[in-house]
Image 1 (cartoon, rainbow, N blue to C red):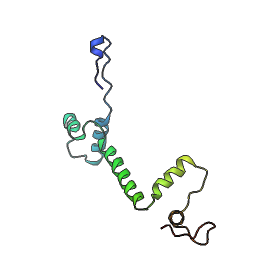
Image 2: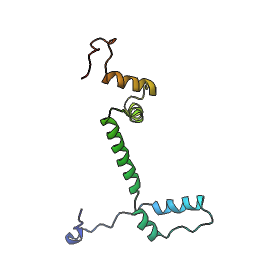
Image 3: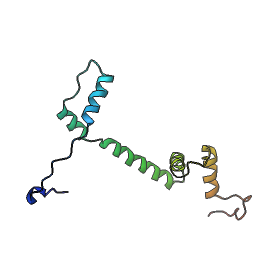
Image 4: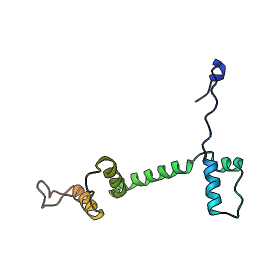
Length: 120
């Protein structure tokens, strides 16, 4: 969004830069004690000043999840996360039970009441 506050006389100072560079220097010192860290300008150039890579990873995970759902493979990790967040008191199904449940929901068996019909 364009900042027009300088025209109104109510100019607010820019927000404080996050301490990503400080975290980078601490991590670099921990893992590479004898190496030289990047300068702050180089860090901002290569990191784009933020953690943009995690956003890209999240988008890639969502694309993979969508593709799996399109071909009928359900996401067990998403199910576990949902159970932890929405139903913490409930015991989640095992991976095998989860996939059996999804398969049964998609292709009902003759043993189940109301089942046994071909989905075609």
